Every structure is written in C-alpha cells, then in structure tokens.
Image (cartoon, rainbow, N blue to C red):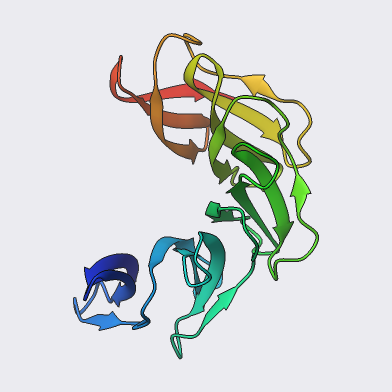
Length: 193
C-alpha cells in the first residue's frame, strides 16, 4: 500500500492506494491538514503532520477507522517525523526551544528528548535500518549538509562528501551507507557509513 496526502476542499487529507488493485481510499476527512510522513512498521498507522490544533503537530492516523491522534501539542511546530524500525520510537523536528532541532519520543508521544543542540537548523531525521543511528540535514556547516548521530544524540558527525558547499535533500539509508541527493552533484550520492 501507498499512503499520500491530497489537497481536497482546501485542506490535505490522507489517502491510501492498494498497489495490487490500484483502488484508492480516502482515510481522513477533517477540516484541518494531515500531511503523510510514513507508515508504522506494522502497517496499521500512518505518521502525519497535523495542524488541527492551529500549529503543526505530530500525529498518527489509524488506517482502519481514519481517527487522528495528536502525539504532540503546544505552541511550537513539531513535524517531519519518522518511525524507528521497531516502531517503539519516533524522531521529529521541533522548534520548542527556539529553532528546529531533532527530538525522539516514545511512539505514544511520551518522554520527548532533545537529540540535537545547535544554533543552526536541523531537519529531516531518518532512522538507520537497525535503529541505532539517525541521519539528518543541518545548516550548522553553512548549507544543508548530511549529518549522522547515534540514537541518543551522541556521536554527531558531518558525513557530507564535501561539507558546507552544497545543499542536500532526500535522505535514505541503504545497506552500505546513506544515500542522498545533492543539488550541486546531481541526483544521488552515497556516503559509506
């Protein structure tokens, strides 16, 4: 199945398409926005950015009934979330301390812990396949470089092949490293790690 967001009636709703039959189903139909971030490892829920509280929060949509459960609330924006491979934790971006930083919390929204602490902006957290590390993009080197840290926020390392000279987008872990796209280098590069 594929989950995606479609702008319908002035807001974003979650839709799911069965890739075998190509049948699409609208899962949410609320007067607020839900922007898809990713499936839970067990395939029963979808992690979304939701603005039902007036700002961006991290939420989960239960596919079976379309219910939306906010995992974060408050005045700050908390979005761009990603499930850990075992489904027990979620990494996300929050500006609750003044600028975008990476946090991790339990899958039910409890026990949020700040993982990055830098004046620069950090975004796009992506868990390693074994759940022991997180790759992310940060402007701490000037442009948006690719960084890697342990799942507890230690071991922060710039793994860009040519740091501070280009902007990166589209991170994905592979079996032998982290693949990413670079606006300066072209479509896809891979940093062994």
